Length: 110
Image (cartoon, rainbow, N blue to C red; front, side, top):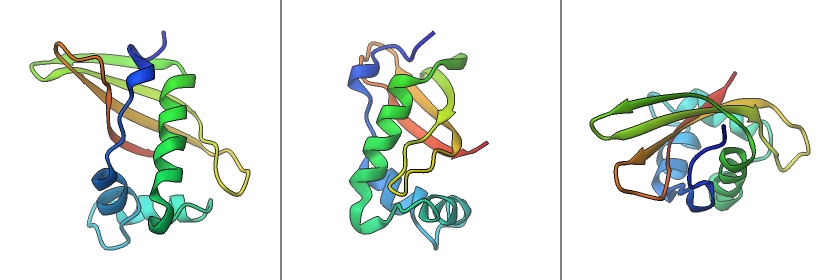
């Protein structure tokens, strides 16, 4: 199964800059070090955003969990990176009820 409405995936700037690529974020700093090893940087945050969108669009959903906020989808697969390596990561998306735009919640190595 693919992510529903995958063409409409959203990755917010704040999620990338203030979390996934933030060396000072209490929960995101280890993720920032991971992504930096593959050439991702805050100054070019849109490159990671686009790579995460592609990840969500091209890999299969491994789980879907419904909640009062919508359905949370987990996607595992390879991430295309600036340095050409392809580490395996997990992305988690939320598709709010009555929406056609899955939004990135988090991403991390697996």
